Each structure stands twice: as structure tokens, then as C-alpha cells.
Length: 556
Image 1 (cartoon, one colour):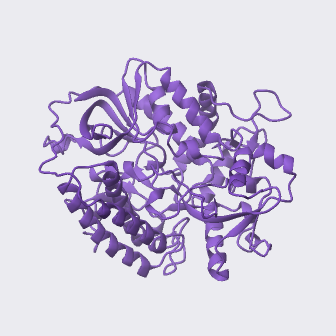
Image 2 (cartoon, one colour):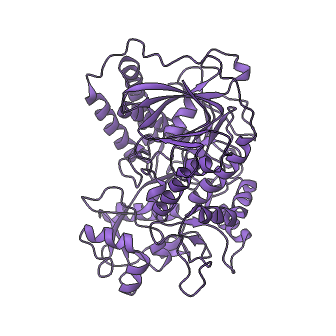
Image 3 (cartoon, helix red, strand yellow):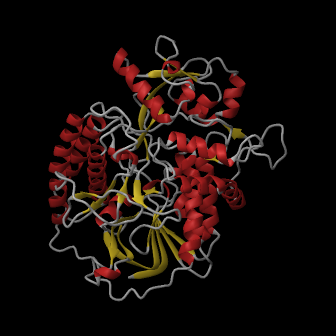
């Protein structure tokens, strides 16, 4: 068993910021399941939201965030995070991130973009490839830290807990993780003396169409759920309104920043339509834009709508959006001369592991950061570019808090026991289940939902989950099987959460209960925990992690 002070699972902005912010005297091991730069962070286009403009204020950033969050933001968290925005930007700049500067300003003045839901220009960015620049700089920062090690092609199997090791349940805590080394096929044991940090990103691969990388299989949420940690608000899946529609395109995001600079959403016949749905038109919050496009496609029967930039100067488009322009050209689309065909796709997981403002979960020694966590910043709908803000701020705070944790005696942790597992002989089971799950999640648990579709999805996930669990315990694990197991756990949580919420709010819209309920159960978080077996138990959030209440019909 290899032991470290901090075991970080995930190499995006959240995980790398935590690692680089840890004290030099404490060892950090970062595990990433593919190459270290193959993350959702690296694909982010827009930027980091921060109220640093002269005409901006923390109060305005707060109001925009809370308005987008549709009544479910934890206001004390929102206020704390937006006030930390300027300091987080400075930390990133100190780490070597080269943000775009204002054309008419000095070197220290940053260019600020505008995105949907924002009433001020506050998006700090690096052209239209902010995430790639952030990922590059953070990896370089970690490489300069002698106490930080990064291991590629290592995928976590399960969090090791004191309870799982047969120790006193009253003193349950995270002790490390069992991890598959893909290069050897061996499941290794990693112990963590101070904290295990989940920074695994989101779960967009639960859906057939997504802007997410192939790594986004909900690993952190699934790991925490199996460790009996509360999971919150998984019904709020954000669908980005504008992904490139092209038969050869895969996960090509068309940034919201294009609409911030004047891009207009139109029907295929060239008529604008967003003015009929929201006063901000094409710059409305993402949940409204995604539902509007979904409604237009169902009404017209068209395959896509278009984002028109042709009224803007060609030189302006090339200069401000060089990567998007080049990407579109690869698919035969010149955004300077013709509109870009776009459709919504699963983009961001607003729920996740329930944590406090510093990233601490209900399980001592287990932190969750970034997209896999639910801090309460996003509420029922994330405001554009608040994701990288949350990842940076939460990671810096978590590192400060975790540094003060005492190291624990890990005792004797049992090594991984494969039992009587045999080599996989039916890989078609994994491929078939993966394809079926993603299709019914897209068709039944998408942008617009109904009770009938949700119950159909629940029945199918029950059958799939049984098949996957039986297969998992019978064969030797590999990455495909582990990711299928995780995404099945996440799908179960999304469906259960959606059925629990008897209203429509933010990203969750149910035709059978279309009104928002601010009086009854609607104004609280949906919190789920794992029961005695694999069943899901509903637990109303009352400001603390206790008082579980069984919800009829939720046992598997």
C-alpha cells in the first residue's frame, strides 16, 4: 500500500489547484484515469466569472447568480464565492495563466466578456480556449512542486472507509481508495492520512449527446454514493444550448461568448425566435435557451437551429474566436459567411456530492470539489462561467482547511480482493448496457420530462443496474466496466431526484407539474443517500447531514 497525506482523484482545475496549494511538507498524489490534460477543464471555452470591472460589483454578480439559480442557491455560499473571485483570478495569473488583456488597456487590465444571464462584462478569458490555457498552466505549476506526483491511467474503483474495513461505524472516515492501474491491470491500494479529494468532473456521458469529454462518467458522485455520502440536486442537469450540429462532430461546444458579442439564434428560415421566450433574447440563462430550442425543434421538426454571426466583421470573429472559427472550418462551416448549425447537449451537472463552503462532505476525510460537488453556488441552474470560479475558489479553501487536519493512523487496510473473478468473456454486455442507458436517459430524462418517461427510465435502470452488478462481481474489472458501473449509479440518482421533485424549477422541467413551488417541498434541496443495500433513500436537506426519511418506491 502506498500512503500519502492527500489523495486527489482528478486532474482538472479543482484537483490541480488543491494539489498545488497544499503545504510543501505534505505529500499529494493526483490520480487521473487517462492523460493528465484530458479533462473537462481543458475543453472550457468561455472563461472565469469574476466581478473585477469598474462598472461591476459583488452585489450584481451575486444577483445574477441567484437569479439563474431559481431559488435554490445557498446565498451565503454565493456571496462568499463571488467575493473570492478577484483573488482566485490573481492566483491563476500567478500560476502562469495568460488571460487575454484589454486591447486599449495596460498589460494588467483584463479583457472581460459577456455571457448569458450576466448583466455586466465579467468573463475573464484566454481568447476562446480558456480551459486549455488554465489546464496547461496548472499542470506546469504542479510539476514545479516536489511534493506533488501525478499518475496517469489510474481509475478509482471505490473509496476505502473505516466502516467498509469493519472498523467502528461511529468513527467512520475516508482512508484512501482502491485504484485500477490500467497499464498493469492490477487494483492497487492507496492510503490517505489526511484527506481523499474527489475532483472528477461531471457526468455528461450519461446522455447520448453531450459536450463533455469521454472521461465525464460521474465517477466522484458514484464513489461518494457507494460510500454512503449524501448526494444533492442531481435532477438539475444543464444542457448547453449550442453544440455544433454536424454528422462528424463529437462534443464540439459553441461558446456562449459568441452570443455575448452579438450572435443571434434563428430558425432555419432565418427568423429570430428567442425574443418570444425571454427579455434578454439570445442572452437568456441557459435553461431558458435550451428549452426554447427544444420547443422550436419539436414544433418545426427541424434537426437544428442556427447561430448567426454573419452581421459582425469577419476580422473581429477571427480575432476573438480563433479556435471556434478554425474548428467550424474543419467541418466546412465558415462562421463569417454562414450561420452555425447548433443543438442542445448535456453539459454540466449542477448537483453532486453534498459539501460545505470549503468542500467537506459528511464523511470525515472526504472532500469533493468542482463539478462533482454540490456547494449550493449553482442552485437549480448554473450561471455561465461560474464553474471555473467555483473550482478555483473551493480548491484553494479546501487545501487550507485540509492542511490543518491531523494525520491518522491508517492501521491495516485490507488489500483489494478479486474473489473468484474471471477474465471478461462478454464485453458486448458492457457496450450494450452503455448504449441503452445513454439512449433512454436522452429520450426520457432530457430537457423536458414527464412522469411517464421518468418511470420508464426508472424501470430500465433497475434492470440494467441488476445486470451490471451481477457482471461486476463475476469478472475482472477494467475501465469500461468501472465507468459503466459509475454512470449507472449516476443515472439512478438523476431519475430518483427528478421523480422526487414535484415541481418545475431551473433545469428541471416536468410537464406533469409545470409550476414552481416556493411554499412546499420545492424550495429545498433533493438529497439522496444509499440505504442498507443498493437502494436510494430520500433525505430532505435541513441544513445538516442527518434524519434520513424513506421515500416510498425507492428501493431497487
